[in-house]
Image (cartoon, rainbow, N blue to C red; front, side, top):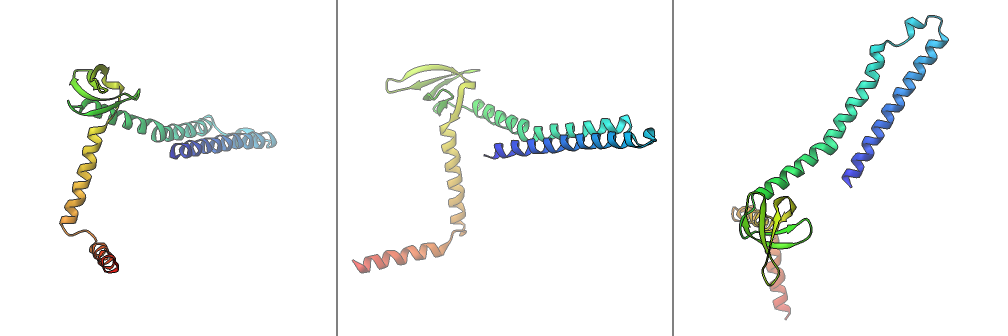
Length: 173
């Protein structure tokens, strides 16, 4: 959704810039033809060049920040994930095969799949997700939250309310 909005914004900016350039050019040509002193009022070659170069530079800058930079970041994250694979990690390939890493090579990985423990050798670039690493990250976040709770940062009012609700339920029974 964000990507569609970004492309729509870039398209709108390009359209406005090209329309304004055409309008300025048409206005300059109309003024030059109507006036008797066309040399004094006609835009110079340098200013016409700047009118064409500035929109192109802005367009390439927007393209870099909207498309090229995020793509490079995703590629780097995928490459880091593929280089940090360990034996025993559960992975999912880009083709949808789920398996456990049995052996890691330079550019290939041997995985075990299925109940019969079939072994497949695949390229590292075909690995889309490391499920084990994702689970480790979630556990680390959970530990960080529990450390905050142990430090007394948790909300004690919720605990008191839940205890009161349990006591009232016990009394009703």
